[in-house]
Image 1 (tube, protein in one colour):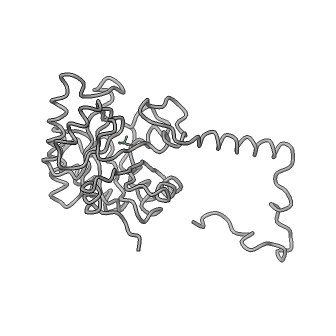
Image 2 (cartoon, rainbow, N blue to C red):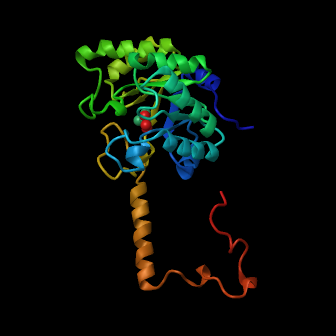
Image 3 (spheres, rainbow, N blue to C red):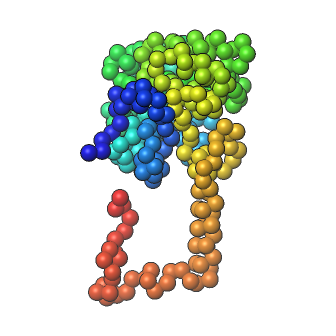
Amino acid sequence: MARRTTLVDIGRMVAQGTPLVMVTAYDFPSARLAEEAGVDLILVGDSIGTTVFGEADTLGVTLDDMIRHAGVVVHATTRPLIVGDLPFMTYQESAEQALRSAGRLMQEARVQAVKLEGGRRSAEQIRRLVEAGMPVMGHIGFTPQSVHELGGFRVQGRGSAADALMEDALAVEEAGAFALVLEMVPGPLARAVTERLAIPTIGIGAGAHTNGQVLVFHDLVGLTLGRQPRFARRFADAAGVMRDGLRAYAAEVRSGTYPGPGETFLDDDSKDADGATAGHGEN
Ligand code: KIV
């Protein structure tokens, strides 16, 4: 019987050299489609702030936003391991704040793990959550919640900054995280971190030599309407398909060809086909 992926499964896949496939999702259809495609992990990322809410960065996302959307993603799926992101200022204050926030995300949304950003500066928080039995995924390199501190969307760990990034990776592992996201890190450094750590690394803009990859749903399916990051390959043109559908709808309403007889109810329901009166909400 198909069941949800566990940390033990993840460990086994990494030991066998099977790359981990992770994608973000934020709602019922994106989560269902990701599950149908066979991804191993879904991250309900605070990238929802930019991809879905259309904001310039992730800083405005709240814990309640994450709980609502992560709950939907958990409800929509039965197999991938679901990781919920802790948003800005829901863990930075103290380990106790992190415990309360992660506790809500796990208890109310029922995610199987949480993710938070930061290396050495977040080690105490990671340790506290792990002590309480919560699986934690770390995230270093470019960390979007620190976009202003980092001076924009920039590659991290180049040149003399490589040693500090390695220290951050070791601190996250030592604090007990089960996996580490490396975002916008030079490929050779991501490879060195992956070789040095016992926990799996999951790259995004970090080259091919990590234990897995993660991409943002909207980037990979072609729903990002603004600038696409250079590392994010567009595997489909969802925006093009949607645009065509919307234009066709508008044209047919204007020409009077939609709705047609088959899309119109009559007074007498004996002519309704099975399910003709069904509405939405039948997932
Ligand atoms: O929020 C997010 O989607 C993320 C990924 C970019 C790793 O943190």
